[in-house]
Length: 267
Image (cartoon, rainbow, N blue to C red; front, side):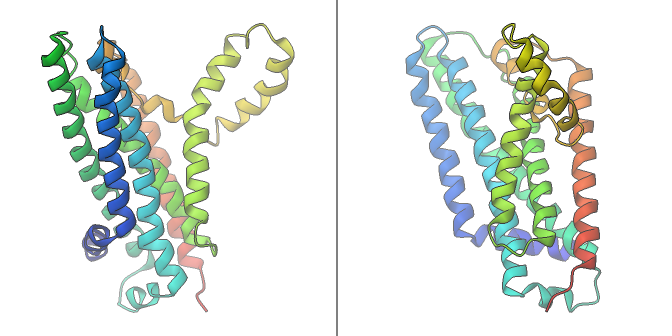
């Protein structure tokens, strides 16, 4: 299992698509710096908001392309057969690859977070806005939530890759999964508030959303950016619940990926 994890690191550092996404993430941090000029009163807060959004996008894309490059392409090119020719189980291959992917995601999250932290700190010093109260534990807790979100999306894409015969299907479905999970909480909140007094809309979509919420995880529960931005502590219960939800869903997706891949036949 550890061998597959280490080989994932080696392959990940050589992947051109991974390099491109990391460059994109750095550019988005630069966009966060530039966006601060649009708010003379709270430039650091604006930079944090844009920076967290850029990190969320970059990490999710990073995880999807890692799954595609390191698992999807190996299956497509049948090079996975060389790895499985060793006396190891297919479960070790899947779990080892996933551990390598989420550890690479953690490294990417750390690099982007440090860039965002330095950017926000420099903006705060420039404008003397005194908004550094949330740049300690609240900032890093928020970063960990974004990492868990990307790891969860990668776990879903890994399951898709375990049975897919279409090269880009894990990326496409993984992106749709990320977007749906991210908007689920907002849609539920909108319907619970009455949908601007549109009773017909509430009656039509509430049963569907109530069903979907048992299938899709609410990824917005892992977004705690309001804490470092406005010092609005979400509370320990919210953070623990979001973490447990992510861990349970990742475990479920990993189990499905192992079961599916173990039964897959390669011709």
